[in-house]
Image (cartoon, rainbow, N blue to C red; front, side):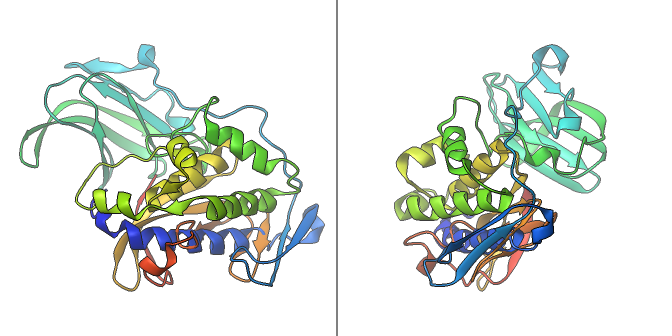
Length: 324
């Protein structure tokens, strides 16, 4: 996560985009598909109407989780790569080394590189480039930006669904049954008439209760490899754009609603930022947001966050780079 110095501006844009995306998604379903609800006042606190529609929301019977299956992992050279759960949208890796390590996931000309602990602690990362042959490699730093391969596995991916990778925890959207974010998400979804209500409730709660952390943004300005912690963000009530996106994704995924974390650039100065894409069977429409059913809609939680909007671009143009 390079260029974290731009998070201050990016975080502000995230909140607005999330707001816009959530509102759009919940509004386009139509009354014939199920129950609906309305609430006076738009998410920004204006005087407009906010409405949702779609099939009745049913909470998942159990929490969809991801885990590293050590017994199923392929091993070599003090490395382990678990490809036993690719269909569920994730892959795991662990390794031991005194040198810096990367776990590379590649498909064709596309690749993602993740920091991998050298103490054997496993990480879980998403299968985010669709079906097909993947190359999974543990790489060891030799000098500067130079790496050599320690161990690799080639495997074919056939996802259970296109949304599978975005319904489970991973390195950047980390939670489990005991997580505070899961409990808070369930609280916010209680009584929701449809998925539009769920997204709106979470969006409004995050915008109202999480403030942008300018000091943290300054501290991370020259750092790389930052990993957000949704529970820590919830506890502190503050965060940068990556924290907002991770928190929103953790809450929505735990409720069975597919949610991506996207990092990339926003206008007008191409600052690096993080936001969400949400997929619901329903709609949410307000003054600022219009979410259409069964399609990915952008939601930028940071953009609307208190104290953040004045430090980022206008949020009208987004360029995706990485999807988690």
